[in-house]
Image 1 (cartoon, rainbow, N blue to C red):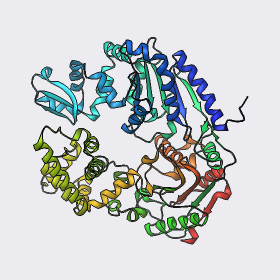
Image 2 (cartoon, one colour):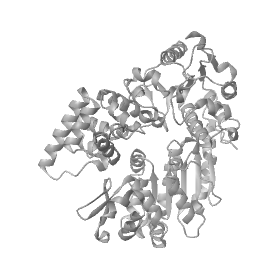
Image 3 (cartoon, rainbow, N blue to C red):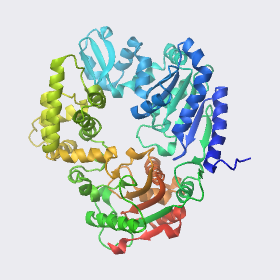
Image 4 (cartoon, helix red, strand yellow):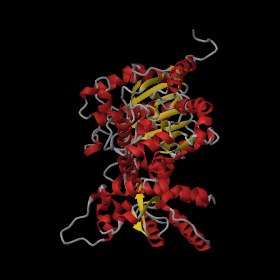
Length: 578
């Protein structure tokens, strides 16, 4: 009998917890599927709160722990704080977890490394490989001073190889009787497959608990969904985030995981703008085909924003997030207008698939900001394994001078100026793929030889003011009113305006919408899934108001799908007003 004092979402959460509690108490492995706004992290912490008093004393006596594997350091730190760093809980990122178990198997690691293509050339000239100690401190491949240093990308292949070793599996099982995985959908697919091969349904194996949502998989090598008869599936059909109009749309988008909102009487709003009525010549070039020209796309954005402000939207960043699924039309407004003209695909800077962009945005910019704020510990943490250890006053002085110059170039130099300084200083250490590209760019061309597209783009990138990289980093970090798709998974905002367009190598939202009710008809299942998941992530962020703007032309089938999701009255054609 439902408790009238409990809101509908809470009642749904109670039902899912009862199933989860039963699985925990019986040692049953499970997949806990929590849709957007359901409170997945709350359920994970609830699970730890349930397990710690029941197992802590015994586990600590036997030198065992509950393993909690996270996808990011941010999630790791939040869980450690929430559990008061309880000694019965080992919480680390997936790579750190793997290395913690691997590090004592030096001989087996060396044997596994011999089978990796990335090491073939480097190890060909190494004598007495068996004398080298293996570490994972530098984060890049190196053989020096009697050490073999693993790259970040080596950890999973080596760990998976070691899982073939019965003794290694026994060590894992003995150390971690329970293994919880956060954001399972983004966990490396080959790693999950290895767990499945060696542990799922095997007597005496650890109990596995996978927390996540396969519709929110947004990283390329992630497993997505886990479907194994040895795992019980538990759905959490609650939504504590969004109001009823938004949740109703989510339930039509994803009918197999229906959600219940916390308060059916709270007001909300959904508005869908499209531009099919525009009569001009749309773009025709490769992945831009069917989109508005840049000026008209920006005009569509301005028009949609004005209409929403008239309807009462507050566009201050603390109230509204603009989620940009198109780039060229708004890049100038965001402050990195040169980048769309340099790269063939938006993914290079919007998804950070270009190695230089990725390193600048993910490591150098956070480190520079930390240094500027005199948060030196945070600076070294941002640089991770690209920061050689500081052993004395001379090292401190070298770092200080190097970072001070980085701030100067960051404010008034170009990308080329920054690379020149970094290469000359040798601090911070650059990733291998960045160094290789720099070396290839510096090599003279043979007669008649042409540079690869990657090098042509790199050469053009070097002329860009570094301030554009800073603005791009702000965009990715969520410190602008705009946001990227990857940056918002797990976040929520009062109002969300999602802007959808072309220019992507991996996404076509018209194709997704056209086949949303018949996924089997899509040409490529992987492309369909990527667009579907991204659409779902955007539509599930708002607490109160959702609006979507499509600058690309939509098929009749896609318009019908949107009407099915949100109702005919939610659709507005602004094409004739541009």
